[in-house]
Length: 499
Ligand code: URP
Ligand code: ZN
Image 1 (cartoon, rainbow, N blue to C red):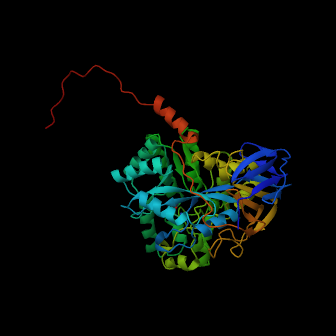
Image 2: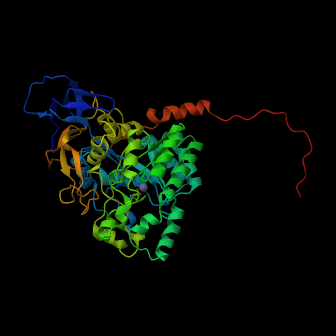
Image 3: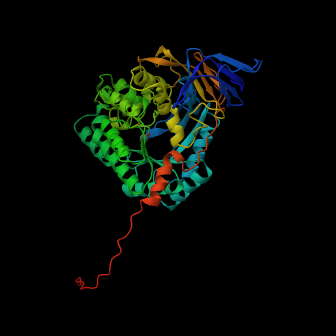
């Protein structure tokens, strides 16, 4: 069993987002207690010494976007919070952020409590919850206030797609963004035009296109881009910070990059799937292969997309990486064997995100090791107000650490992965960058291929509103950027009479 030992990590190179240094790390009671050159602690029964010579010692990954245990699109879930977090730690991720999603017309707080009751006994690493706003009313507004004030929720996701299920309209977005701003939360959007998707899907089916390629054809890039631009515009009109989840297209990424260059407080989250593979898979002749890639927004058939997204991630045009991990086996995907609109949406990623970003980002020379830490961990901790407790190796930080071998390689495969799903969208990808040891909350939960994780050992991490990293500019602008009326002499002349 993974016990809470003292741990001394010797001889490695610590990599934070701002600095790398050859120093040792000492861990006790789940926290980093000391950092320094050649630390000298006397060895004891209850101390584990890890030799990290030649290895990188980095903050464990934070996956900002998972859906564990979620019965999505009518199909039963495949991975619960234990299975999901086990796969996370096997890949070097030590915290996940999942979504509590209420049905339209139902309570956000009840959804939050339900997701907590699913996650608390199961997680083997720390987690937090975003909450979805799928409808609008005064009750929803009050519940958002309570969630932000009392329940540690500082991020709310609005869906611009999934018509009749989760989709909200522009006025509802405006109200939800205004509320987020008032309570110090970050507004998140799934940016796709749900009306256009619904019409596009009917058109594809009428053309006899029933296979997974129809999924992309009915929601091309511009459907994502239009919604992204609309979300940016609405958020900016109420000076609300915006976080665009699962950015899948070059066009949408460019909109986010431009908004950031104009000074708007917007963050973009590409995901492992979009960085590691592409939408040509929807045209694969094997239906099972093609269907396994169905997710929303879809992977893009333009094969230059993954590299482009990685380049924007390296430049700070995009900010963090998640996975949108939401897995279904082939027999579940087969609900849509004759109609692509019935294929449950979602792919794997939680286990492989760190390796995919290292391989495609760092090994390829697009980003350095410090930027890797920024986009896999630190930026998420800053945006969602958990820094430096999370996202940094520093005295006092949580002992969430991955010891990484940048030279070793592994080949991703569904045959060897720790996820429950029978397909891996990265099958056969050879990745440099292998997690050797994962420490979550001060416990060694994964070491040299062996999982040692215990369900319930992870904790819910409450997050305070108004993160400085996001809100300093926002609040300052409120003070200096208010429009003012022009003071004029009243008009005294004639006014026509309307008939
Ligand atoms: O296909 C996806 N993305 N499944 C998960 C639900 C969502 O849209 O986030
Ligand atoms: Zn989504």
